[in-house]
Image (tube, rainbow, N blue to C red; front, side, top):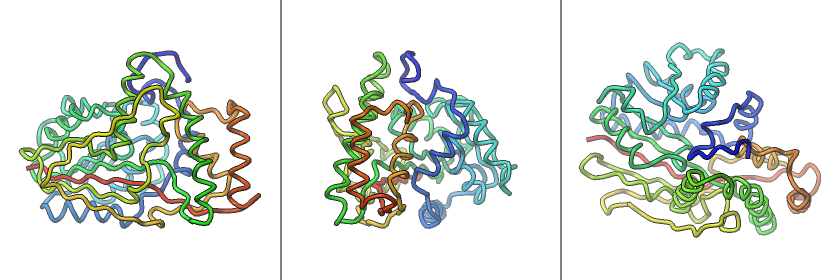
Length: 325
């Protein structure tokens, strides 16, 4: 770990450079036009306005940049001011950058900073595993206007999409991820451990543990792609605690499951896989990879088809949509 500080959110305490975020964006899936349009369509059907949107835990700000093409004003907030500085730098060349306000704020404290019923949409992309769900959902429901839309999404570990290669490649990748994440999952003090247990259980639950009460929200949809695959970036071998999935999905909520081997498809060679592993968390250090992990990378390269071979990758994804009553 980069620090011995005990914290419930490891993204709160490190100073990351632009190179990390460039690698992060290159290694992660691209949220495509059709995906955003599905969110905007849900918002339109529920009579949502397009005045103000919040992008919570904005990171390098790629979601805020997209929202700025659709909303009059976007508030991009993050727990780490350094992330906001990176987002500001990356936004400079964009035509809608003047619409984006960058604000240091946690998701749980959003309602302390913004008045009730002031937002038309709140987006939380690839962050909810790390959040206190109850406090965050309460804050979101306070800040959203009636008919406002909540959009939460999360993707998990990459999936080798070609059956001819998946049988050999997937177990090797998962072993690499387990060995790499174990140093993070098992590190830190009591707060860190509690946060990792919460995050691990939430990913294992495909975010089904996130409660959206019927007296506050309507037309809740949980759209899942490739849910037959594990969501968590790591498995039990990376943990020193039992993994316990749970569900707060109520009968009136709509759950749609889709198997799509081409969803957010990427094509990676071995270098791309390594980039993903190293960019997974800011505390990863490629120079610190031990010989066992390096040997598994060599085995994975051969399983992928040898030097220069490129394989297709997809993802397990969940999108939660809800309209505020």
